[in-house]
Each structure stands twice: as C-alpha cells, then as structure tokens.
Image (cartoon, each protein chain N blue to C red):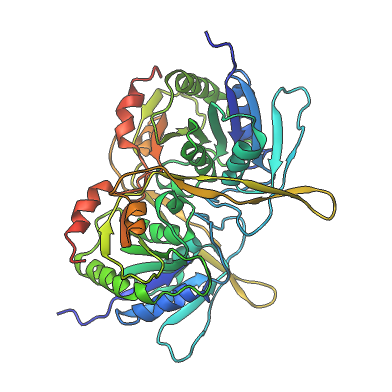
Length: 258
Length: 258
C-alpha cells in the first residue's frame, strides 16, 4: 500500500481570496497535501494567456493559519500560476491539479475563454492529471455546498483511475435549487457561441469607448452535450483535449490545389 | 459570376504596426476589400483572453494614406479585435479573417498560447473562414518575402473551396534560408511541450520576482506533424478546431464509478 499522500496543486482564475477556491481547498485537504498557487486578483476571461513581456511576483501568503495547506499568491495569469508552481514552488510533480471552483459556467465554447480551464489544460500539457470545476453562479456569495459530494466523487475516481493521456476534465455544476441534482453525465462540448453586443459610451474627455457585453447562445439540440446535462440538473464532465488538430479535416484540405 | 469582392478582416497579436501584419495587408489587398482591426500594441501570448473588467477603445487610424484598406487600432486583445470588428465595425460578416503574420512560430502546443491563432479561432466560432499565419522568426526585421506565394495560394484555395465547419487553419512558414521551400504539408499538431525555467531576480526594493523563460521541446517523432514539416522546409497547415471535447475519452470515463 502506498502511504504517501497525493500532492495536489490548487489554482483558479477568480483570485486566491475567492469563495470558490477557498471551498475547493477545504475539500482537497481531505485528499492529500495541498499547495495553492493562485492569482493575487481576479483574472477571469484570461484564456491561456501567459506573462512574457512583464515580471511575475509569487510569494507565500497565509490566509487562515488554522488551515494545513501552503499558499502562494501570484501576480500572473492562471496559466502562469501553474507554470511557476510546477517549476519553482513544488518539490515534485503534483499528482493532481484542480482549478476553481469558478464563479460561473465554463461549459460549451466558454472553455476557450476560461482561465480556470486554461490552468487545468496547462497542467495537462505537463502530464499532470487536471480538473477544472465551475459552478453556474456568477455571484460572489454563491452557494457551493451541494457541489462538495460531486467534487469528492470525481477527484476520488481520478486519483484511483488516472487520467487518459492528453485529457483534462471540464466539470460544470448546476446552481443550487430546490431539487436535488440527478447525478453526473459525461458529455461533449455543446456547439454554442457568444453573440456579442458592445455598449458604446463616451468618456469625460469626449473619447468613445466600449464595454463587451455578449449573450451566450446554444443552438445545439444534442442530448449528449454539457449544456443539456446542466439544463437537466446533472453535473457535466466534458473530457477536454489540447491537441486542437481537426483530424477529420486533414483529408478534405489535402484535396485543395496547394 | 459574382462580381462582389470578398470582405477580408485582418488582425494579429504583434500590434497594428508590426511588419508582419503590414506585409499581410499588402497581400490581402489583391484579394478583396480589407478592413484591419488590430491591437494598438503587442499582445503576444494572450491566448484567448478577452477584456471583460475593463473598457475597450477602438478608433480609425491611417498608417499609410496611399493604401486602400480601412484600419482600426484597438486597445484590447486579438480576440477583442475580432469581436469588435464583427459586431461594431464591419457592415457585414467578412468572407475571410486572416491573422498575422506572427513574428514567431505557432506550431505544436504553441497554438494554445497564441493570440494570433486565438483571433482566427474566435472568427471561426462566429462562422467566418479564418487562417492564422506565422513565420518562424521572432525578430522584428524578419524577412517575410518568401511567404507571399504560399499565403496567396492558401488564401485563394480557401476562398474557392470554403472552410470545413468548425475548422480554422494554423499556417506556419519556415524562416528564409538559402534553399527554396519544398511546398505545403497538411499536418497534425505535434505533441510538444514547454519546459519552463524561471529567471529569479530581486528588484531594487528587495522583493523577488521572476521572468518566464522556457524552452520548447518536441518529443513527437511523427512525420505527419507540423514540427516535422517545418524542420523539413515545408509550410505547415494544421487544421485546428475549437470543439475541445476529447471524444475518444468519453467511453473511458463512463467506466469510472461516478
């Protein structure tokens, strides 16, 4: 029997003080030795951004001295946090990286904008089993309590079975409601899209500026999608890959006259 | 015969003044009506970041009054540029979006960090045929001349054949050398990874900081990859998708005890 506890890296994109990551840390302390390396401020919508033309700070921080985990606050993006954790902070490669719990959905096409999921993907590229968790509630005082049993079940199975190579998990959890969640569905990413609207304003100096304010639209009627699962009160798990090759299109484009 | 000229959106991540985009604009003017919406400053490594907690500026700019294209300089990321172009600036959906020419490679795993490719992917999510072009030369005075014939050939075939649904093209072009390029290969993304090193320094106030400085390592020996093509003096085209579902892993994870 292996008596060594798993080493678990925790990060997010809402910042190290966000309720979602505090809740996730508490759960992860039951599974192993936890090291937190997370952004010092909110970094939502950062996608897979990295800091290449500027400096990075990353310093130990104690948020609650009664909690067992080590924590580091980093000035960079979620992906920076994973890179610096793996290469500068952790003594060995972690057994698992969990990212979140994000305040807001990362289902469907949201995965490509998501700092939460990009952190998990970055860990995946380094050969670390990784899971991003997101709750479908953007509010800062979101209730995460119902997500605990699902996170425990998924983390436990991931540590037991290992992760398929080149895959990370995108887990989305419906907002709490009066009815109990029905269970977990393994899904594909729904073919949704953002329809953007820009709110145009004029600043006090007379210069026009914009706020991005779009609407997510899902036209994918499939019942095997993350959107379907979430609408029907299931937790969705979308296995997600970072080989972006459209393998099926290679043959097609080979017919072009290049 | 359709006499209407194609409407072509041009963007990049090195900024509107970078030599790479200036070269690309010149080529695209032969194909249709060109509108440029590009970052006002370099935004390399921004991945699919979007600006959600801050304002965006996007204003007309004339860089060379003898050139026919319309141009807009935007304070946001490459993905912001595409969103604002499509939703605020262009009168109709463009027939093509081209991004680049990036100063530096976006082959293999680099695609996930790349602002150039994220701009193309964003256009793809909006149903716009899109191509990212990158030259394997990071220098600001890179010689783009040899890429012209390949870009023309690829754009011409794309306008003729259309793009497979859910696919954008990631085109990488070897640096100029004494030998002529051998042609074009349709490839898969090589399974490479960044091995990071952090350069740790101390600032004048005594606080430690880091510079990210990694090395790209390709352990993928396949001869069907973009890395292989580029090393062997071919232009690589990697069809790239934004459905990140690891479809092959759904069955596997359905066997977990969830």
